[in-house]
Length: 338
Image (tube, rainbow, N blue to C red; front, top):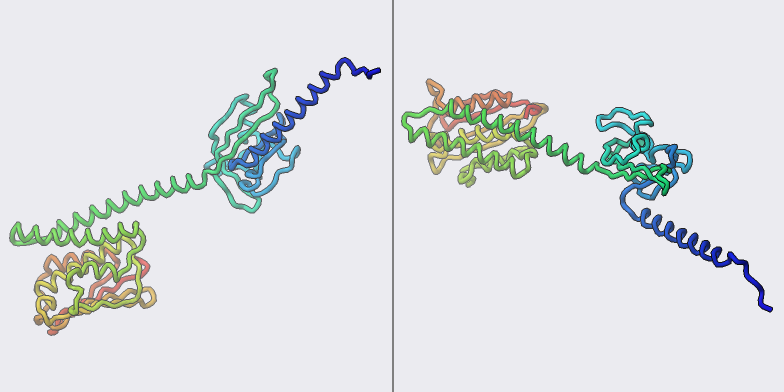
């Protein structure tokens, strides 16, 4: 005679199947959470951590203790301004208190090793079928790269404003110092000076406003005269952009004067440009040979005025020697000022 099965045997099998299916779904969900690059964790209503994925450990620098650590998998939290946050103000605690999701809460997390990371927290309360809160889930997103990009952009904006003001001041100075007997002569002189300023700024732009190599700047300003008539030598020196503009103007004025009245007005004339760094002093020398005899002018011309004014901007002093064989000019500057 066949054995009789309990009347509820079918229901038990269905229950077992449902439990197994739920267990498999839960395992599947957790596998998905483990593979997510974002840090995700859950808490109960008292804020005790009930689950966290691997990304939490990578982001926060330690593994929280389940059922013990509260409110966040991070060690300590601060406001974006750097003020320590009381635990009752941590994102999950605030979301459970408000009874709603608080997406995009920015915090700074401190790791046990002392390093910090900027985060966006997205805490959300979890409700059961009876609409009772049973805990919370939170996702932490690392926004460190975004914050650095924002800071770089803000710094760049301030730098653009600063440099544009400086450039405007230099242009105004050039206009004020430029003098000539005719409009056409005035235009030619001013265009030459503005072109020299533009060349210096092109070098600055090419290096994204990093330091400018003095040799590259001198050779750029000399342009077509980088031949056997000109010799350039000196220690490697990097100039800040403002100093590069000023050096460019000085070299332009010296070159213009040499072409009009000095060594570069003759095929046999030569110019030697050199500089040395001795302690905190940069000594920059422009020496002409083989040109017409020179003599100290009775009055300062506009070129000399531009050189003198620019040297002051470099916190330097000019020494001129009017020799029969050609002008020798030495600029003495504090290296720290460059």
